[in-house]
Length: 292
Image (cartoon, rainbow, N blue to C red; front, side):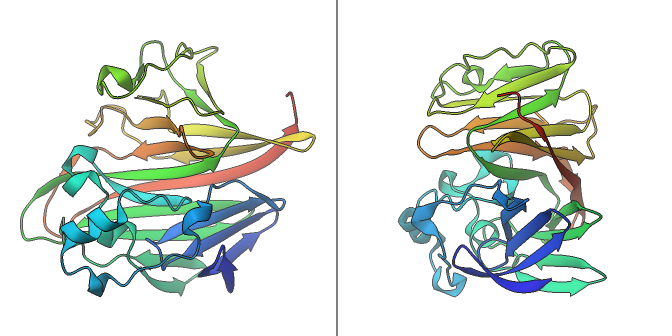
């Protein structure tokens, strides 16, 4: 690990072979850069590069949230499910935008959030890169004295154009306009072909879909010069558990900015004091000749 400026944030770089990861503990403990053979795979919002905050100035969280609005910085982050529990409909500031502490031991970086004043939750994000792959482990802790029912929600903002391939059975994915009338219907095909749903993300059509995969992996495919980058995310999941959004995997296509999200959920669990829910992902990235 070495210090590096990551799009204006003071951060650190971890690298192995063709992969380089840029972490920014100062803005919600994010992974803000993922380079494969020098190509950036993650979206970063140009309007908010290098932006940081002092949470000690957030004396009134309602005022702070109304001032900031629903900020998009980009990268890979940890949210808390369900979304309808967010105060003012905006992610908890102490988890999403405050600085995380950073430690490094045994080739693993750990970024730790403050204890959230809105929710009483705390997030740990552990990152290790070795043998040309990345291992990301996220933990969501209940730091209150009472049981809380929550789920951990990983969100990765990928630069468009891209597409996502999700192993699935027939009828296991749905367009979210069914749940949220403010969303338009997804116009693509959610029927699996040879056991895989392919969701193409390009342009500015708003949509969100989600459902239950047939196993714990998704593939992100990104076009490159004369080739296609294939980023496989392998993760632990319990297909029989209950989930806050009734989905393990979600895809969101932004109508205004050049990114799409691949989102992963842990089960929606009752956490006792100091208990955590955990999500572990292994990222494997390779390239193949382009079919586009």
